[in-house]
Length: 128
Image (cartoon, rainbow, N blue to C red):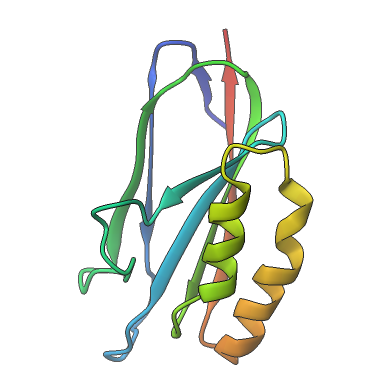
């Protein structure tokens, strides 16, 4: 319920609740901007394979608020297996207005996780 104003910094992170019982979890985070543009947030170059750290805490975003303003939806998917299809689809759609392309890849990643994955969505509200 927080409104981020132009020029301020938005910060977002992931915290894994509960025990992973030593299981590796791969994290994929992307933003669907208010105009439908897809932006991969994690993992980026230098983030390795994109596994959740042992601490269960992962800073994902620290960025200045710029246009387009409105409501962005940040989507985080965690899976015990490397999400090849989901990440490939995100790389192919980076910077495009392609929000509708991700229902299938997300469903596939979560089906393969067999109850050991998760999907989280949060909104970021921004204005001038």
